[in-house]
Image (cartoon, rainbow, N blue to C red; front, side, top):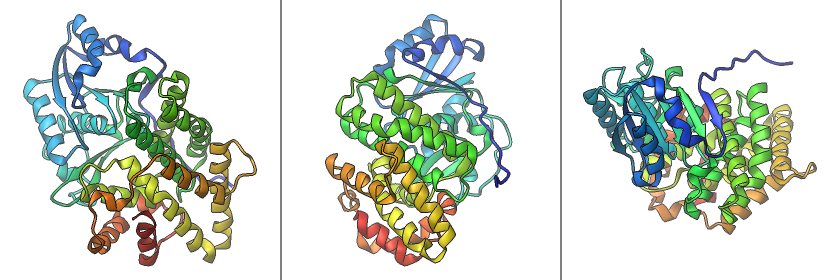
Length: 388
């Protein structure tokens, strides 16, 4: 029996090699003044900027060299308002894209980003549509190009939370494998693992539904083999394109089915440590969360059968081996963590004394609500210990 579900994807998505160089065509009707939100090295994308300027566009840059904070989003929005920008262009990894989406929203909605954030903020509804926002991801990881939220960190609260609304969907997303070919290996590893976790969690979510299931299955089928090729042969354009599609599908899937305890805790950890790659945190947490979910659902036989099948299905798609099981998924993830030197949690300066506070925050996180099992405090402690 299929339970009722809904699908919303207002973003136009263009996928293909070289498509980012055509952004000037798509941006033509959006206006003259463009607020560009990008990473700390905007010169990497000079060809994109020059094509826009050749069409008479005026560009003003805001650079984001880390995961964006509430203050970053507020400052970018103020820059856009003061300059009366017609539209926003976000080019970069998930951080730049989330900052662009948040800025575009705040340009039309008064007040600070904190007023709109979940959990740590007032959760004020976003009342007005964003200014048009076009995004071009340069990493295949977060899927932020097609999600209705922008993740922001709050150093004061030592956590990350989402500004969330259907108005946050970008107007246009361009997925071009040529935009991330020069990314360093640690970035490729962290981004790729993030995309794969974002396909596994919606597939096993309490909110899983046929639309998200189809995206997860195709994303894992493409992303599993492509991930290792991208890391080991970054000049493989076909692998980069498949990884970009996997990340795109992960964003669509999580927007419709939610995530799980991995992202619930990863968001909290990201607020407690500086410079920890989100994808690396997610990957380190994944084996412990899989183990905890399987153990906790021992008490619900029907749900346990369902979950074992879903984890086995993910393994079969990643490994291209129909007989693969949940144990094979655990083995594959654990081996990749060691093969690629994904850092353990303790390397980021976390202290054991923080565990209680971390768990309390993770239990309240919106992603945790979609986890297939209700984890106990002991489960959470085991998850953190396994990743420590």
